[in-house]
Image 1 (tube, rainbow, N blue to C red):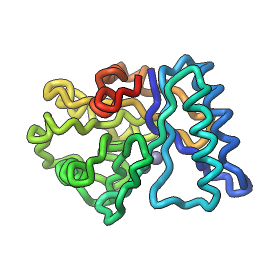
Image 2 (image 1 turned 90 degrees about the vertical axis):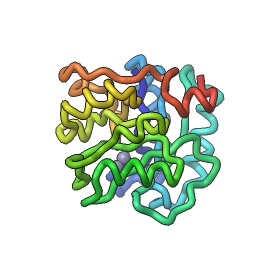
Image 3 (image 1 turned 180 degrees about the vertical axis):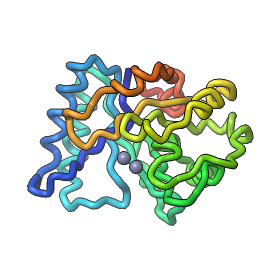
Image 4 (image 1 turned 90 degrees about the horizontal axis):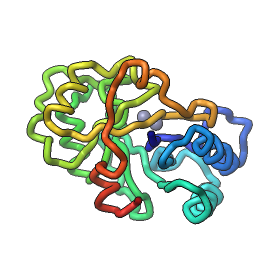
Length: 203
Ligand SMILES: [Zn+2]
Ligand SMILES: [Zn+2]
């Protein structure tokens, strides 16, 4: 298992230096036996001391036992340009948009993964997703948003060969892991077969 959706910034406003979270995440990921860890930040950033976070992630890129990636979670639709230093990107679909629209917006922005599909006000009904089967865009199996993920979408993704990636959407190191996804018996795409991982030579 791997996790491509881990937030550096939690919801505890007392924390001034979020880069410390990164140490705990890496330890916890190694403890859980994860194959890779993808940190993400909402972009545009909501924090001031980005530099420390970026430096710490860079440190672990070179020193952790597993591949460490750094991605951006972008609200779509959006006018934001995604900086090149991010290794990958996730689309957080705004309330009211459906999955077909989410795929189109992700395609326009070269986004790699649609985060937590059908959750938090995004819709999945009336979405013709067959047209995106060769787009290389993955759908996320979100531990946090699992409740919203319909079974038919899992089956449809498997049928169309749309990649399914794992993401906890953790905001705390203790939130790592996928108990709900395992319990539901959902299957995911092996890391080496995730299109952006393959293309980027991340393994
Ligand atoms: Zn999100
Ligand atoms: Zn998120």
